[in-house]
Amino acid sequence: MRAVDIIQKKRDGQELTPDEIQFLIQGYSNGKVPDYQIAAWAMAIYFKGMNARETASLTLEMAKSGDQIDLSPIQGIKVDKHSTGGVGDKTTLVLAPLVAAAGVPVAKMSGRGLGHTGGTIDKLEAIAGYQVELERSQFFAQVNDIGVSLIGQSGNITPADKKLYGLRDVTATVESIPLIASSVMSKKIAAGADAIVLDVKTGSGAFMKTLDDSIALAQAMVDIGTEVGRHAIAVISDMDQPLGHLIGNSLEVEEAIMTLRGQGPADLHELCLILGAHMLVLGGKAQDEADARRQLEQHLQDGSALQKLKQLVAAQGGDVSMIDDPSRLPHAGDLIEVAAQTDGTVAAIQAEHIGIAAMLLGAGRETKDSVIDLAVGIDLRKKVGEAVRVGDVLAILHVNDKGRLEEAKERVLKAYEITSQEVAAKPLVYAVVTKDGIQRFV
Image (cartoon, rainbow, N blue to C red; front, side, top):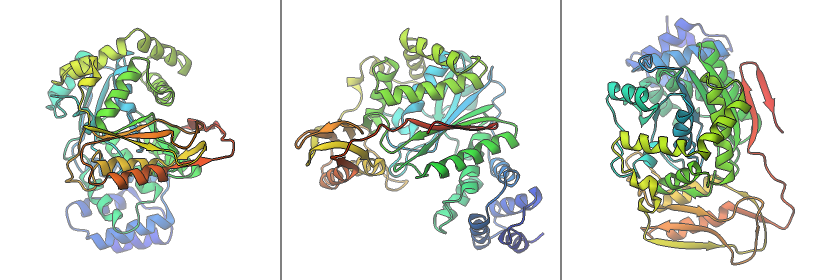
């Protein structure tokens, strides 16, 4: 078998066999197939695509390239949740304790942020003492004991995917649905969950800007799950504005706590109920979404979801007093207001600009080696559909280092689109994709 023949076969639009995909991925991992041939193969996929079986084979090969976690020591059906990225997306901080309170075990490995998107592990480190690394046996024991653990990803999960992604990033082949889908799902398969709920973002702040592309990506990931014997469902949710009001690591922990208290922003509260309901159904704890939603609302109302967060933090060495009193979380030294410069109604908030502004303040990483400031970020005071007048506060910047403050303020102002026209409300969820088809809401 030769790499050049496989490249030519895909270039000509033919289906690759599992053995051919295995040959390329294993060869690339061990250095026998060079970068330039994998780059040519990735470009062939970019133009010719892959079918569901090919994409599943690629996913499994990347999952097998490193550690594969066997979650069988954990009792029950393990349901994972993955978001394709967004700004202000702190749903994991709410969902993990909420779903665990309802009896579905959550054994989740999360990543750190890079660029304008935040990482769950960075947010958790805003809680003093919280340990993001656990031995495998501790991880399993904790989930069996309290139903939930949130830790950082193993350093050897899907090394072939890491290597391939780095190459795609410099060869203009990132925007390929089969390659994106297999990248996401390889990590989920390697992490060992029985079922997966995918939150696929769509809009200006998402990787997929159009609804059609977002649905295509969701369908590809659900198809992979079906091909490899995992239950998967995808929710297409809005990222034409940030989720919630607070962006930044400590700030997002605070907003998650408020949501678990029943006092969070409406969009975050609703999306967590939607995603959580699907997790309960897949986890066998609810007959249908309506039943699941009732259970979740009860756990929010009676305080058991918030109590589960406290158990999680305590079990991993964190300071529980910060959950009881979020004012003890890290806070920035200065609050800087950004005011509206025109009258009208907020028509859109370009989430990517807000994410970049938060990064400029120090809340995110420009490179993998950047040191983040857990205290800084942005509080959005006006969301889409709200009326504003000149001088009204659009956002409050939480600042420690003022070195790039003006640049951050300009980004925030650029993010806000204010119109004199009437603004129609946008849906929070556009569609749900399952192995049985697509349910559109718009």
